[in-house]
Length: 239
Length: 239
Image (cartoon, rainbow over all chains, first blue to last red; front, side):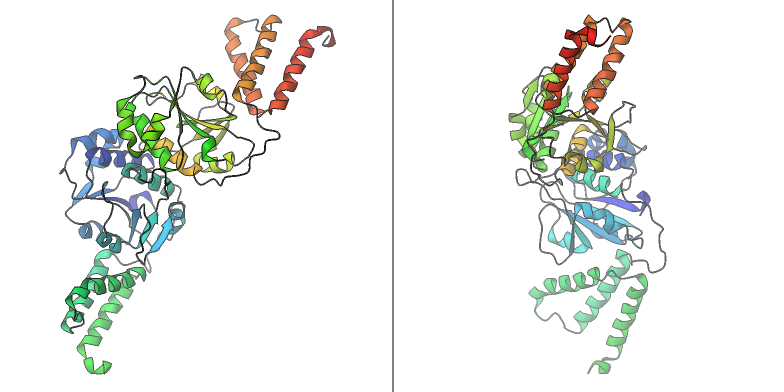
């Protein structure tokens, strides 16, 4: 992992002051890639510039996205941050474990998601993540400011030694994975797999989780496309 | 160490917003003892209440002091936080090492000092500390917000397991140590030890450092008082 390849992603942040404080905190630990999905008060934001202090350059080069999907499409690993432990069928790690977790060199581009100040990340956004990192706070005051959360993540990740990137067997990008999932979904729809329409969303979530957890390489994603084609092109093989 | 026995001490903090953010951050990790030496804008401070959010109870029970000496007089171990590494003849530790450092059970009451937003702690304040903890920040933006620093310290210390306190051989309190140093200083003055007045401050610093680093117990401090008395009461023993 290198600082170049780590992306801090704020999902619908509400207060400019917090966006600026995140920029300051991540740059304190050598990080500078900030992506923002639909900032509530638009962009640019003067308050963000002001609280960023010497981290203003992070604000100036921040990338703005219309939705989370496009903000993560070129990444290989997405880690969501949560306070509460939600039962999500995801790999859940504690904050101190994040160092070891990202050390695996095959994740070349890593994104860390931070939710809204008011409500965090919703379930749909958590499903997109490969892992969930829990920051354990005290019952006397569990609610952590978003810039404090970003600071803690940046601090922990600044302790990870840069490792050599393996270009062989690299994890598929989120876009490659999504195209494959779209492929399956279309074929399943054609096959009338989702008979009960109100169950469709849940069924798709389960499928998404399976393939997200599998940590597929680009080559494996291509293999799956081939399998889907083969299976659907010649149905008699299945019977 | 237990959360009851850890004191976060802000030395002449300037902005109420930061005091509140410190209160919020330390309570996020289970700490609640806040001491403030001469807050610039007086006390109480409405902005501190506001940014403390659910950590407001920490602000409400914060203790205000007129000087650093009285703010640490009942503590056994004082740790100063600095960004830059200053040559101080002190034990200097990196932030991740603080967990192991405070695990020593004999330090029953521990204070962590945070300096002014503008200039940090001055040398005189650093001398008072037993240890200095460096929070390594990046050259791209070394300046860490005081509440972020407090958050990182609180996060690291929240990972320390509570240990049984040894009441035998407990470290002397800062007050006990100071009285002993005053005793030596007075006797040295009487003996015309500080011949060159402009060198006196430096000489006292060296003496202070020696006895601070020695990590004396209450019983050892009493022994030193006895030694000073014996030495000065019967000077012929020295000749």
